[in-house]
Length: 292
Image (cartoon, rainbow, N blue to C red; front, side, top):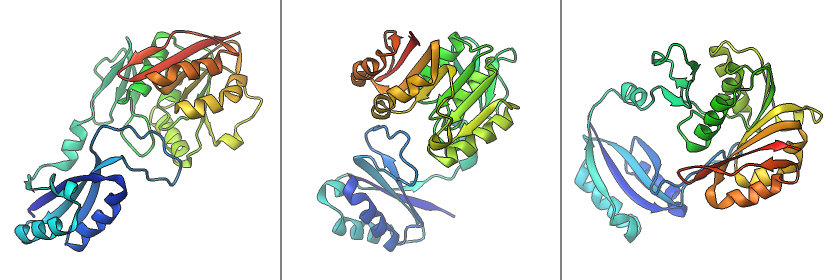
């Protein structure tokens, strides 16, 4: 079957109603895309946030009257959106293969690799983590995750207990386990993340990872290393609690922080930790420190 796409850019408040319009005009599906590379990281469970500027894409059967559909869209969408409207054929391709080709083995530091299940390891002597893209946040492609993986590669937690707070897909927990951690506790407020963490641990033959919802995580739990790749606001708010989980002389690694937020987050943890200078990748930073 042949298809064509109708695409236009609009403001976030209009996106849902304009999606309904395309469905009424016969679209087989409507999807939203980010128009301006605006990050939306780890929304609360059940939330479906949209970017401020949204590309609305309607997929239509090529047998439909393209000219008529274009006219009807132009009559009903805002003028600024109409100015961006395009209709174009959608080329046939192997969509599964195209999706798989977007993900390939990625190296972090000297020996740590994330390897999709359909790829062979590049370095058979490296520390290879088998991980496919999925629902939970974290495949190593985002700078916040990459910064944490680079730190783990440079500071392998051999023989240590680790907490991964905001574990998402379990990528950091699994990396810590593969780099020698004796026990890893993954914590996340999204039950789907806990399922993903355990599934990915099983794929990597890791049995030392426990996963918890925040209210089920033992308050007295202590670790040599705590990793928290979440967001700046929650990191500041949770600073007393997260700091309490780290033993004296233990380390903390924080990410999910934009460069202009680093000073405030570092200050929040400086009451308990000797904080090190921020490490920058693109507009994101990683903070780390050692507990007094």
